[in-house]
Length: 173
Image (cartoon, rainbow, N blue to C red; front, top):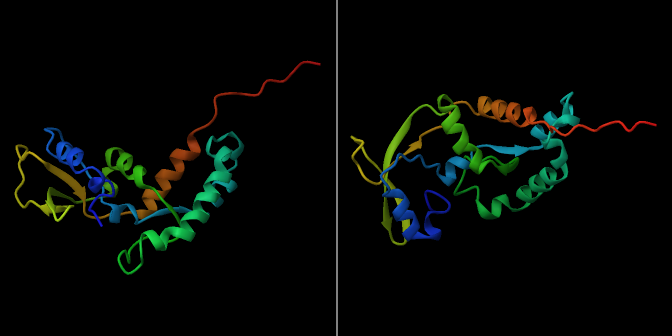
């Protein structure tokens, strides 16, 4: 598999992105598999006293379906022998990690500096021991999720805080 799930889909676009002269953080596919949204999170939504006001409450059916889908196909896409550290209790929070790295970097701790090399049709990260800001094509990647419980707590707090601003109005008799 690739370091990042989408790198091998369009090698030219990946090369252009990685060589752009802007700061980059990449979350590997393996890293993205460390935590999942599952039945425990659904229970937190259901147990929330303000759940009827939350936007996420409107998507409970879809969330449940996604959990069952990933419980059924997760091992086929990401075999346990290849991905022994992966979460197995729901669907993966791929894009949420990108937001979390920007807003809560302390959850991740140490970041490594890498350059991607295209080897046999696959982009492979090569760690750089002494990076400088002038290294074109350099990107950062977290080495570990230091606080999985903290990550999930912040995630749940954020999604439960999104409420609908449309209020039902009472019709006068």
